[in-house]
Length: 134
Image 1: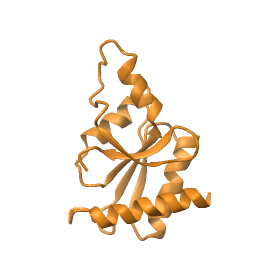
Image 2: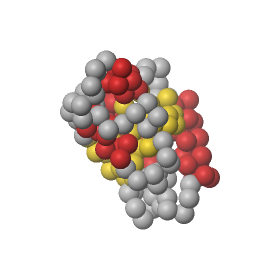
Image 3: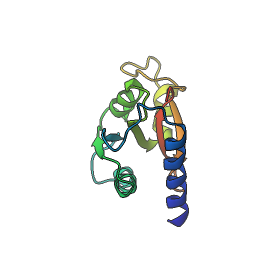
């Protein structure tokens, strides 16, 4: 848990060091998008990140956007403005699988280059990511 906290703190410091002036988490909330329903393991990661952001004085909200094998939440983050105010907490396996195993990925509005992984969360496949243009 200490390593995770250190990684997330490193992420937070990196975000503030390289952020453009449009990034203002004190006055404009960060949306932490979880592409699963509330109550699961990934939702818990989103809420842990929310607590860390809150401890820094950053406004934030966990947005559960489940459905279509994570496509709904993933599309939302991929189309979000590239200002750092929308982050994705989810498994990178679904992102890859949705692109790889669908002949015609109907409804998928993201590509393999739409996201940039910031912090791997734990030993599993969960990641904290943002729109690749951020």
